[in-house]
Structures are given as structure tokens and as C-alpha cells.
Image (cartoon, rainbow, N blue to C red):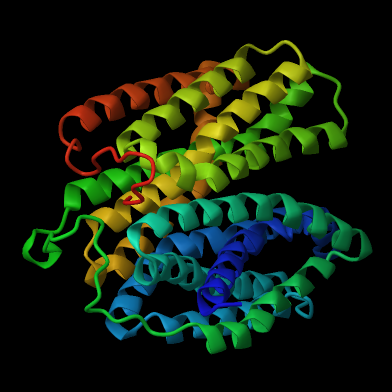
Amino acid sequence: MPRPVHIKAVLLLASTMTVLAGAIIAPSLPGMNQHFGGDAEVAVQLVLTMPALMITLFSPAMGYLADRFGRRNLLLVALLIYGLAGLSGFLIDRVDVLILSRAILGMAVAGIISISTTLIGDYFAPGERARFLGLQGSFMALGGVVFLNLGGALADWSWRGPFLVYIAGLLLLPYARSVLYEPDKADDQDAVPGRDTTAEPFPWGRVILAYSLGLLSMAMFYMVPAQLPFLLTERHEVSGTAIGLALSTTPMAAALVSFSYGRIKPWLTVSTLYVVGFVLVTLGFSIVGFATSYALTLVGVALAGLGFGIFLPNTNVWLMRITPAAYRGRVFGGSSSAIFLGQFLSPLVVAPVAMVLGSLRDVYLAAAAMCLLMAVIMAVLGATWLRHDDPRTPAGNHND
């Protein structure tokens, strides 16, 4: 295989490591709680959520280090720490030490997700970026489905079983070391030919808007795994298998759209794609809120998943277009932080909102209304403030 294929394989596999960090051990939580004692429930929940918190806190620092000292070697160190910290969970027999190992794992994931996305911008020309970022989003969405099921199978053997999967980081390390190279910082493959980004002020307003959209979209996305099981059990008599099918429908639909993003992008601007994404989530969450049957709920989460599949590659494509290469690591470190902060905050925000509104049904309808408002806002911004960021390109022109 030609060298670019190996590079793409490494970056895609590294991206799935970030999903594996949390999803793989989720099925182990009941067994873990039983092993450490019933009074350790809160601590056991921290075992699951600690990586997301560390990713939120340390992604900006990892991005800065990548810009300051280089991408390749930092990514290799992150993969090494990831494998060792993840595998240690198989041997640890104290919940406080296990939480510490998960914190170290989260720091490593912060490096992996920030640097792997940064390298996509460093290695690939604009048109290929859009296609590859869509493929990355698809891999990450499908990874969530695969790892949840793999974790469940290993958890049936032992609650420690899923921790063995973290050996993947150590197995990927020699492959990554042989394939990846340090990009030339002077080579800024800017999406707009002839534009000297070094002479322009840093686009703070646009970057903060992109971060906000990433945080909001991830908070909405996590309403499905965190809240849908409770909504289904309130309305219908459903089995665990039926709940699992409903939960997997969203990432599967998201993976389908992310995979096709590179084909869609040449026809539409970034702001237009945000509008499409928010409209799809509006329709999906509205159906979930009004659904009177399990089948109709599946239709709703599938539609929402189609919208969610647009957001991650679209945000990354936009950030790569507007960010000078010298700042790319820091910008994508901040983006990773915003995305995982949305994941971390989602259940914390939904709980009080549900108390005020009175039901999860109304929470989904309120979220649909918010997404409709965001669609209108992005349509207005696309026609005004952002109109020159991403001119529409015809099919066959593969600029971002």
C-alpha cells in the first residue's frame, strides 16, 4: 500500500482510541460496583467519567505542546501512556487508584484526539481533508457501537475483561512510529489559495463560535444514551435489547452521514451544513418527544443521528480553513476540550431542566426548539458575518 494509506490507517485507528476510552468499560460498571462494595457506586461512576473530565481540562495544553514541540513524538508518547494506563485497570484492586489511572488515561486521550485531528490538517490538502474528516467521524461513531458490544461480551467474563482492550494503544505504537512523520510547520495548506494567514489577526470570534457549536452538538448527542433509556421505560415495556437497538440507531445514522460528508461538502457551505444538521435534529427530537410508539421513537433518533453526523466533520473542516497552521494544535486542543465538556455537562444540565419542565418528553421538545433556533441563527450568520468564510464550490472542485 502507498504511504498515504498507512498514514490514514494510523490516524483513523488513533481516533477510535478516543471512543474506546469510555465506551469499552461501561458494561463493567455493575460488576465493578459489586466488587468494590455497594457504597462505592459514586466512585465507580467516576471511573467512567474521569477520562472525559481530563480530556476537557488537558486538551488545550496538549494542543499547545504539539504546536511548541511537534506533533509526531507527542502522539507516540500519548499512545504509550494510553496503553499502559488503560491496561493497568486489569490489575488494580483499589477504586481510588483505578480512578487515578483513568485520569492519566484521559490525559493521554487528550493528546491523541487533539494531535490526530491536527495531523489531518497538516498532512492533507483541503479537498482531501473534508473527505477524510468525514471518514474519521464515521469511524468514531461506529467505534462507539462496536466497543459497547465488545465491552459487554468481555464484561460477561469479568468486570476486568474490558481493560484488556487498551492493549490496542501499545499495538498501534510501532505502526504509528514507522509511518508518521513530523509535518513541516512552514507548509500551511490553507483552504483559500494566495491568502497569507500569518498577516491576519487570529479569528477569535469564529473559533469561539465553532467551539460553542461543538459543545452544544455533543451535549445534544449525549441526550440519547443518557436519557433515552429512561424515556423508553416510562412509555413502553421494552427489553434491554430494544433499548440497545434504539441507542445504537443514532451513532449508526451519524456514521452514515459522516462517511458521506466528503461527497456532500463540495455542494454546500459550512454554515448551510450546520443549518441542515440542526433542522434534522429538530425533526428527530420533535418526533421523539411526540412519539407514541417504540417504532416512531426509532425514526426520531435516526433522523437526529443524521444531523449529528454532520456536526463533527463540519466543525473540523471549518476550523482547518480559518486557522493558520502554526496555531492548529492549540485550536484543535480547544475543540476537543469543548466537545468533551459538552459530553460531561449533558446529564448535569438535563437533570434540572427535566425537574423544571416536568418530563423527559418536554426536555426533548425543548431541545428541538433550541436546535430550530440555532438553525435560524446559523442561516443568518451564513448570509452575513460568515458569508466569505466558505464560498459554495461546485461538484468537482474539492476545496473545503
